[in-house]
Length: 413
Image (cartoon, rainbow, N blue to C red; front, side):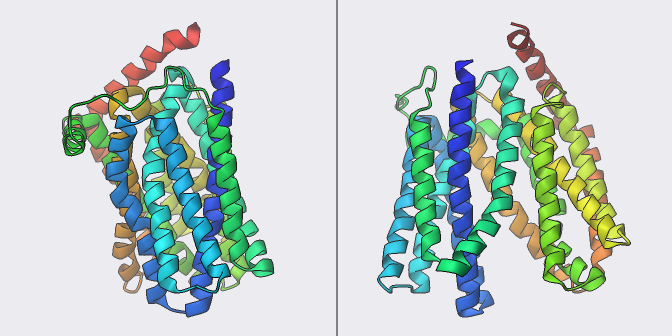
């Protein structure tokens, strides 16, 4: 069970590091909002916080397939910590220009662009194939817990002591994360991969690999559609729906965030326990349909408590999609291509939500919010149905089932 110790150390370290990073994200957003009261300033923050990550993910995936993944994660986390520490020292000295903050945020985003695909690519090196679903479920639960706790902790620190202590908290959690990762033993860990190919050639090889793999294209397409038709409407339309239909009390929107986080946490627990041995592809498809149905139900909710119920259920379905999605890729993609494949997964997630926001935001000023939620949920159900009937959908289902059968001997042994 040496793998279990390594997985525990790895997940604990990444969760602690994620907690500190999320606290800083909220704190910086609050600082810019309260200091500038400017939509443009906040929009630039979002651009610098997520834009570099989306671009860098392309190159981060290549690095993850060329270099030692454990060392690469440490380097990325350390880069983020150094940028955060530098920002803390500059602001302590009274240098708090928005462009200084934007620069630090951009550097942190670059580090995240390297770290995110590398983390997903390293997990199969630590965890046996038949335990990937369980570990991914646990990781989802831990991430959801951090997402639930970090705004509250960030708010307490920010209101009591200001923004600078949140930076030091992030540096401390990064050090803990790096320390725990150093203790992780990666069986057969590789150094830098000896290759005569250029960086550009490896990048092109990753694109060709995805283009020639119908399963990967299908999975990433379904993920992007889910983010566009469910994640984006929920992010944009839910606050408006609550304010226009149920009331404008701040606790109403906060409660919605709590319910979806609690649902996601419980969903991760279920995936790691009761659902760990279920068919990955069946669970993925069932959860995609469920998210679509619950999105429709949000638009039909007559009372606030009903709305919260379906918010919780939608949160419950999220890990039932994400954990099988990640597991299928980890079990079927060639190990030397995992970093590049997960880099495109990161890009799909990073770009799909803003695209959906750009679509549904203006529509919310023209059509009723309930109608938009109903239509977006119904569209999600429809496109998932069509995608399953496509040749690439059938091929994906077959490949995923084959990967599950291949893991059975390890489970029985």
